[in-house]
Image (cartoon, rainbow, N blue to C red):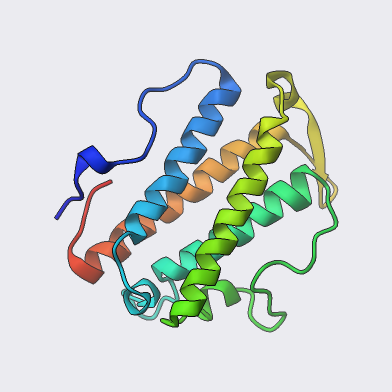
Length: 176
């Protein structure tokens, strides 16, 4: 079961300039995760379809909200951010393990993810192509901005592979 290609919101074509390419793929993969979650109720979004894993589509949304917050705010902008979204010192996978079929949690999780995407995109809007080679420090390691952006594309792509399997287990939908 595939979704209607005519309603696919993801960008087509690939720009040439490096920063535009990185933003293109980051946007593409963010929208891919959104498509994987499309049309599911709270219970099915929170379903852990591959036991004993704690992965669920909702858990992935929550995890990627944390990822966006960490890399864009904490690492790239060097901002003092409050505790990460969905943090629990006793459970390093709390954003995954705490995902439940509560409609309010689903709404809050998608809103938090969207908020982090918008904050990240606002920062990216200020970035010039020559800034990709700038470095930031993370745990005494120098990282180029471009490397962080490539890592974020990779992070989304990897989790979209998980989302493919989760969605297929839920209702047989494949593709995207």
